[in-house]
Length: 138
Image 1 (spheres, one colour):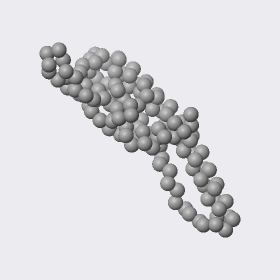
Image 2 (cartoon, rainbow, N blue to C red):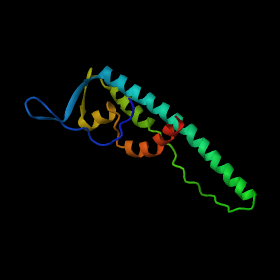
Image 3 (cartoon, rainbow, N blue to C red):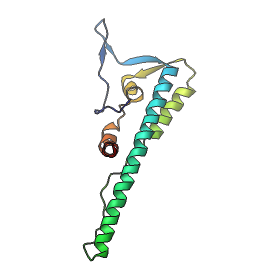
């Protein structure tokens, strides 16, 4: 599942009775599988972003080194956002679910958005600085 372009809380769901659903109970095995798939996709995108980030950094360093050797302006400041890696968030969620003795897990709307929909609180900043590298590499 590709990360969503927006971040934040999932929309409240209205039931047939007209009440809002704020919590949902999910099967432990399904939740673990989803978290593991989301984690694997995060690693894949992060690794691709790092390859492109390193490529751009080396190109910029080479360009600046040549400029300095040729007697040009020396600038030591490079502004390239470093790709973000959020494996700790996935690992923590996976460990919590694995340690649960229940076969079903109740998730808040916020947790469901993070764990199932992959809409974490850090999604916006991650999309801005990490996903940009992976899109350029395509």
